[in-house]
Image 1 (cartoon, rainbow, N blue to C red):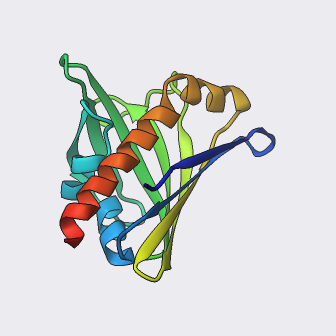
Image 2: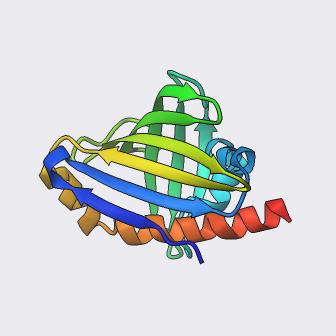
Length: 164
């Protein structure tokens, strides 16, 4: 069973996350960049992600909600800064309202996501950079590690369905 590793690099205000998926690069890339697929794995169960809009291009953004089992709804957006197809993308990730207006009271982060194919598998490396160590610690306290690890488990399941 694959395992998500997460390393806190406080000196650089970063979380470094790595996970290998038992699927080819094109399937893993699609799962990270196609809103229909993202909605199926991004939220840790029993939560669900729901895309309102997505423009996966430089200058575009993904606006989505995380919906809880008791009717909770939290909005977020990822603004795409740099994309190299089938290799990497960078985005500014922020909490926001349902119109996409960024909530400055909750820390955001900058994502650098890299995809590395190794035979029929793909390793995804995420470097999440924060403005301050306090922002990094706040996101960790909010359950980021547990939630993102659970979402990776969802992605394993989805890729197993797509590949077979």
